[in-house]
Image (cartoon, rainbow, N blue to C red; front, side):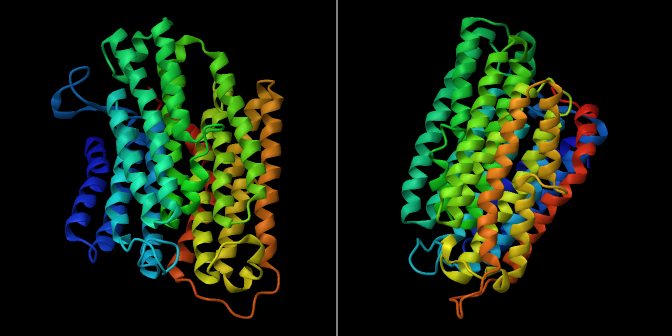
Length: 485
């Protein structure tokens, strides 16, 4: 298949699958969802492989190029994000089959809930299609449209659980809409000044005018809210902590990465000529604060899912320490490797929490004694994922953090390296706190058992997080060979 064909498939397959799943209804939706997920994952990986062989390429939809028409564009950066979404998305879909078969309502137990869990499949596939569209969009307005698709489908997925998840979903909706408003006002300012929204054309025309700085500030603020970067993170823990487990995995592993990706596009591409070293320092400082604040909050949580949710706040912070280090070789590959490792390990951790909920009927950390004996495969998956999140060798998390720390030391910015090291210690504290309960004497009885498919999927993702340790050099070569805009 040609690169253009892979690009069309990556966009069309999830959205068409969502329509078919919605039309066929409750009985067929899981089958359609998994088949679509596999096809979408293949399309994403095929596109990434095409980029690695042929380099970046552009496609004018309908033959009308920018600025009049819509251009799709993919380079190494977008290809990595698409591949990450494809692999983790397939695993989330497979896990969701067993999860919702056990929980026919969308809530975390078989009592209560909305009874509409099958709607997960069309909403999830629309969310997936929105993320692919965002990574492939070649202009700022279509990126805005993709963000709205992601935000609205994400809210729908969160409120499937009913109860307290409805309030969390509404908070997420308000923050998403506020972020979108700031973003689109910035887009309008850029269009009024440069009469184009195409990313490549803006990169060539941008200059340091007051309107440009105003647009950059508005768009950055909106995307920081969507990324849940400290101190704009208040929506994330309740949304991720109260949603159904597959939804929590998708939001934490994949959705929060979209805001980070767009900020990389803005400040390392479009606005790179503005000489905004102070902006890079500010983004890095917010990332460092997120690492420490999120780690401390995760350490204080009593529920496993809320602990994993606050861990996301901390782990997102590592990615933003890329910006003050971006000019140093190895920083960008390190951040992308860290993002991919976080996606696999964080999805696995939420899946492990789902298995614990299935067996114990709750996720109170202090009452999880002996889960190692009752859930050996889940315990291994939790341990491997923890190794990657902490940044211990051999894991993708270790390789990514090592590259970022090496970049910081090479640039004489030892304080970034110190924050990352301290963040790793905090991660070890709250993750080992959970693992300690695995080896205590288990309770005599328990309320349930977990389907083998749920445990196996989390273990596969955890192994991927470890195996990404060997992707550091290929990723570095891809970014240099295929390039970005």
